[in-house]
Amino acid sequence: MLLATAAALLFSVAVAQGDWSAPLSKPAIHPNLDFVEDGLQRYLPEISFTLNKWTDNRIPQECKSRVSNANDFDIYEIHYDDCAEPWLLCHNRNAPVKPETVASQFSKVPIGMRQWVRLLIDVPAGYTSAYNAGGTILINNANARMISVLVHETAHSTNMGGFPGDNFQGLWDGYAQDVGVPDNYAKSNMIENLAQVTVVSVFDENVPGGIAGVDPDWWKMQNQIRAMQRYGRMGGSTTTLHVPGQDKECVHHVPVGAITTK
Image (tube, rainbow, N blue to C red):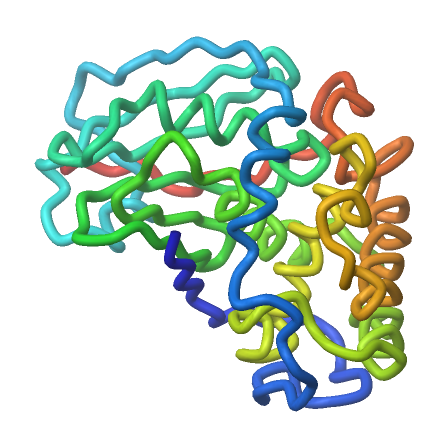
């Protein structure tokens, strides 16, 4: 699965040790993180949900501003059992999967992280990718095996609002101590590395045997993993943002913003 994240993310505090947008010099430990998908699919539970399709001509302004033709979209409320407030999905009718598939895959993202996502948009495309812009996740060519992508993109949303304002000094420190970064995409810059390390952290905290059970080279990024896991215990969850079910209900919900007409 190709991961193409829009990294136009603004951090509200000063840069810690380095330039967040600069390519990282340490080597990639793996070409990609495809090997974690099976474990995430198996051990992150699907949260029960219902879909409510809007039958009028309304659409979130955030969605309308990011798509080429708003009339191609149906708008759904996704009501999950672990949050009183629904998420909105702008679903292109020509997309390759039904809205139920997007809702099911997104439900597996732990609520402590998922609660920081503003809006979902899925569109048809020639390949599968996704990006996060201001907390909105846009998915190209969605499919039923995209948990690692959704965790990555949700990490961008979480990291914009779900953590204390030390600008992830611990991650920078971990990077300085470690041998490398998770994969080639993580080498893009520290923003993408942070999200890829979060994917590994979620795997480690939810899959029996953890990352050590599937990756003999995990130790090469161990300090970054542990740093993100420490942040996961500081971000508003009673235990950790990275494990589902530990917050019975969401404690935060991002407003979707203005609603307009198509």
